[in-house]
Image 1 (cartoon, rainbow, N blue to C red):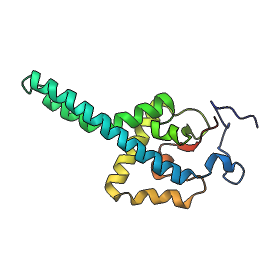
Image 2 (tube, rainbow, N blue to C red; image 1 turned 45 degrees about the vertical axis):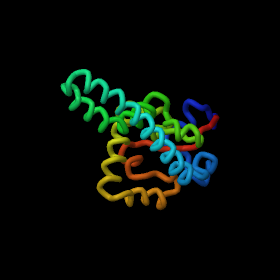
Image 3 (cartoon, helix red, strand yellow; image 1 turned 120 degrees about the horizontal axis):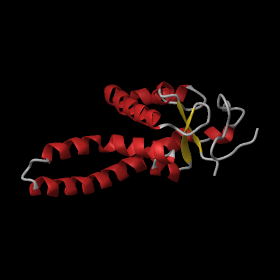
Image 4 (cartoon, rainbow, N blue to C red; image 1 turned 135 degrees about the vertical axis):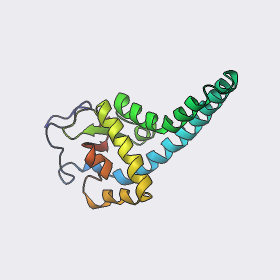
Length: 157
């Protein structure tokens, strides 16, 4: 099978025993990558909060509700946009991870939004326990990966 960085497989992804390099250390890398992304979201969110606060003051509070909505949606936008446009968040890139469709293509915008929404909803409802699903499958897929038809693998670069 010919492997490229744009589409590492055609059809169903290879099983973990057949391509261990795609899945090696995936669970730990995903956890640390997410922690990096949380720090980036917080840092950029503080900057966004400052800008929106200034705008709120300058508009005598008229745009303050819009600013609150933007701050609430900031983490969703961060994850969705990076997954859709770059195939990985900065934390994922730092640890050599990339998001793919089940058939090896790049994640679509809708898939990125669905995966992100499912992640935040499932984690919020189950207090992170839902992520234990990744321990019980050989590809380290979480429930939001399964439901959004995505797969996180090691980057081929």
